Image (cartoon, rainbow, N blue to C red; front, side, top):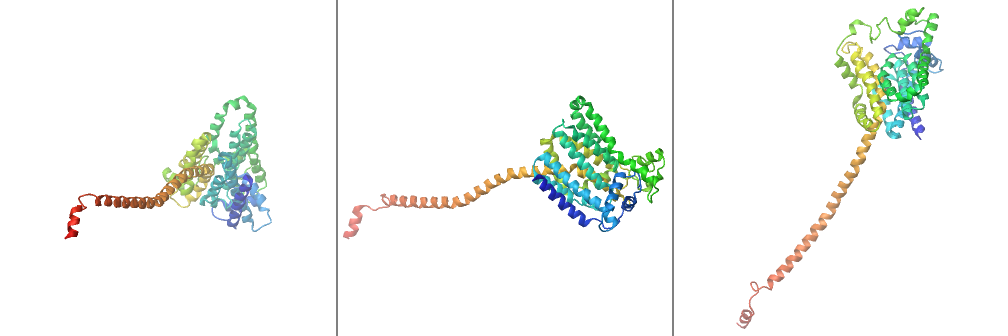
Amino acid sequence: MTFAVGAIVVGATGLLYGATAARDIVLGDTPELITAAITLGVPHAPGYPLFTMLGHLFSLLPIDTLPFRVNLLAAVCGAITVGIVYFTAVRLIRYRAPAAGAALVLAFSPLFWRGSLVAEVFSLNNLLAAIFVFLLVLWQERPERRKFLIAAAFVSGLALTNQQTFVLFGPAVIFLLWRQRTLLLAQPGTVTACVAALLAGLLPYAYIPWAAARAPVVNWRGVASLADFLALVLRQDCGTGQLICMGPYQGGSPIDRIVMFDVSFGLTAGFLSILGMIQAYRRQRWYFWFVLLAFLFAGPAFVAYANIDVSLGPTLFVLERFFLLSHVIVAPLMAFGLVLVAERLAAFVPTMRRQIKARIAWHVVWPKIFFQQLNLARSCWSLEMRSLYHCSIFRPPRDRVRRSRLS
């Protein structure tokens, strides 16, 4: 049943995203990324080899226009991400309905929906992040099953060939490794296997020199040497660690950026995420700390560090796409929030039912009591009057009655 519900969630989301996906190129990096995917080129730094290769495979689909085919990659990644969030939540809370609810809240959030409709690297990054978290949750259930940790290391390597902001998971991962340090120190081969898996995940970068050697239409920096390759991967033209290269758009207030980040969640997702943090702290303490660290570094810390002025031009459009990683990180928390709401309602409804029954009973019984008391009062009044009638004060003496009759 769990898989059936997950299939329904993924299928419904996929149909929605497929129906609303862009049929042509749109603003942003989409024109460059679609062209690079179709022609097997090299887009701007850091090259995005994994996205380019997957986009090329989608461009071979015998449907609709070429841009739509590549845009469909984002729709498929978005739908599968929603499904992975569902399965992650099920593993954490053991309930299907709240898990499905949390996944669908993510699916219908405006920012995530928009990001799943156009050919950008962020939808693929969302998918890899969701898989990464899911594998770590499986590993934490039974830490001796090291295959999940090794698989997570491989996924992290793949993610780094798509979006380098994936390194922001670092502090949260270090927390989990420290939590299992005794087991890891007893099994040094696990650490070695994880390092090897991470390096294997970086293999898509080998695509860049191969593609550049073909002199494609899109060939950023024209990589011809190791120095060119490192300069591209490390984004030296823009400045390593810089989000935006154009000087006039740099700067701005970190507070403004953090406010925009908070607003991106909306009331529903924000409220459920806060409740989810409370519930996770009570029920799954390790997960609470993992999500908190991942969220703080991928969200507020990165947004505050990002050197971009959101008050100028289209800079908010550039920045808000980087909010998506935080949305995916906290998405399973919303399932915890829904469980907390359900528990409070379950505790409140019986009390409310008892109060309603008591009020109904009072309104039904009170008239009976009233009339019983009224009848009792009448009876008492009647008896009292009879007793008073027999008293000498009210009853005339017998001799007076006789005299009145004789007269």
